[in-house]
Length: 116
Image (tube, rainbow, N blue to C red; front, side):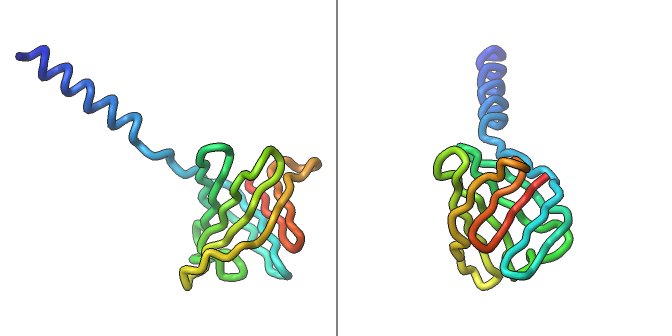
């Protein structure tokens, strides 16, 4: 009976470890978009395939009113960028390519996103 209880407890502990979400890391963000800028701390959450989401730490939104910015990997070095507004709109910023000069940065037609 004790062995069964220990085995069951081990399964629950293992399931909890596997199911636990990844913790956000604090990064330094530099975001320029259509004449507005944000330079400061942000939460950096990575998902599968290199897709990542940035959210501001101190301010409620990034410059331009975005609550979060997600860089969705399309293929290596190419991403689709979207910003979630405080009105709940998931606006498409457009296609971005990874900078060859600074690998922490992604550049689109009218925006640049860097997370260090």
